[in-house]
Length: 396
Image 1 (tube, one colour):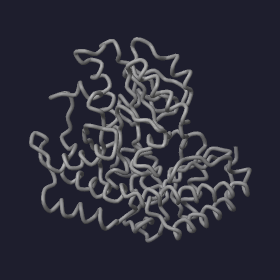
Image 2 (cartoon, helix red, strand yellow):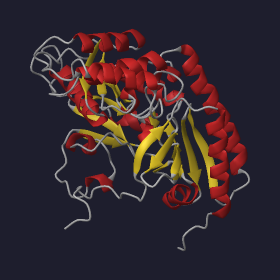
Image 3 (cartoon, rainbow, N blue to C red):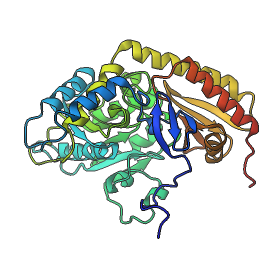
């Protein structure tokens, strides 16, 4: 028998949170942790945010779920706000990021299967070390072998290309290509921002060849970078965008956003979700947008992120044997180590009560709640400094 009844697909650690307060998590034994992981970029308003809690409580007491066979005043209202603040004309609500990416993939293929499209175009070009989710389609969209093992055969229709290499992407375009699927800033891949030239080049290639540009902003979207969506930093607009994580502030919510043109193949019966767009999730999403669409809030994220990154640049100079590079945008920050990052991430968690997230490319992800202030920043550097001072790399 397993130790717990939960399927053992996560390497769960000894931290067992039962309560959250602003930017801290409290374990069942009372230990307080500074949460600079935010549920992997989900709890962007921290824990116990009164506006978010109030919205969920009021909606839970009114109406939690109805079928999508009926009209949705709540869904229409949230979708309209997303349309008003983004490139999109239309929105499909999901429960998670993987579902949002699935919808984006289907939308792109349906676009080319439309009556005046080109049915031969079904392949989507994706990029090395990307993470798009854990469904069969989304693991097939990644080139990471560790995600493929045990699940063969993968779904066909994806071609892999080096990230941030425009020439390589252009060389893969042929008569079967439907579009590009890319994270503007790779999250699981190590907080690797794409260059402006690369993103602008993908937009040009898509326009030149009649393809669709699909952005996976599940991790980097919803104010995480200091813009509502990261594409704004690049001066371009996508055709389709997948969003989730922070959009519900902790409540399960995702969405696929698209232009009217890109969604031309998504008519009655093309897609669906039992729980997607439920009134409770819509209330959470509305509460989050109330906060993160405020220009002053976005400026706070940008300024705080710049300040943390500047201090980290100075900090790593004191530990050249341990740290290599700082990169990111806003409060999506990567601290690249000179070695595999997981032992240091565990050391910070277990010995200094600082929660971060390990990622690829030897990188530590720093993803604090967007509501952090000076006190949390100072606490972070105190705990990080102490952790760097007494960390001993594991023997090779």
